[in-house]
Image 1 (tube, rainbow, N blue to C red):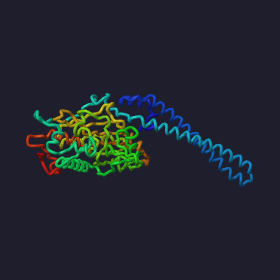
Image 2 (tube, rainbow, N blue to C red):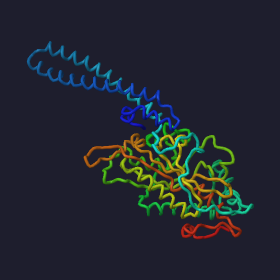
Image 3 (cartoon, one colour):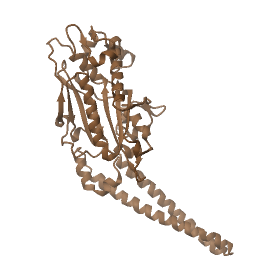
Length: 423
């Protein structure tokens, strides 16, 4: 969430930047400033009162020692009344701080200055693209038909076992899925990311720390009896490793990668765009997470984008990178680049990765800090990216590589699969 310092230093700039996300912050920003003024005055009054209580209390013992019991009793009564007042001030302070935090968590992150204006995905800017879109015949099949033809994925069986959006991968389909996971993990480790294996459920503090709560609880599966949430992405548990942690500057940047299953309710999703692997309730993904100093975070973002680009290039997929406009940015992101690959049989682009810089927005929630060379603590910047999400990558691989002989496997995956053709 935004810091009070950011809001107080230039409220008009904050309001202006929030408008790029189509968020009207004028009323709530001014309300927070008013409450913060109350908080500051209350804290000042409370500190002065506690100091007075401490000073007066010291005199009671001496008065008793000198035999001035009546005067000591008078002072004791004064201390009692001052403590009642201090208790009231403490209550006011606590309530005011809760009100401020309750408002802060409803405000999205400020977009970076390079974020283009716009309201929908149609306003996103294409940064660059690469790869060749293959020419397929009129008889080319979408991936859900290919999965059935070659017995790779059973969508109906998933419905029987669990429900729609929980496919069962079979035979070479399962092996290709595992090959992609191992390829992504090995590539991340080669790029300097340390692999971790996180839990698939998190508590509410972790959901709050990365911004899923209280904004997106309706999109997460909630285990009510234990008050735990199934993770929507490995970003949540991995970033929360550093919740309430003060890192030393020499430890930065922190670079982690993790494979996990991901769970999303995707409430309200329907239509042709959700067929097959296009939108699932459970899917696999390899995530990369970085934590760094504020001055280095955009260099780190560029590095992560270049890294994800190498993955889609090695998979021989046609790709493009989009700079998201203000209206398409997530609640917590300051700047996001989306990767899309072209699905030739479906004749459309499929999003397979988002690489984002959250600046200090998550770190402020997480209390994730670092100690600089002057031994002062500052908030870190956090970043994450999909590297990569498997379902739509698999869909594009199946569709784009279909031939009369079968489905060709990209060369980089053959050592992981153990086969070069699905026939």
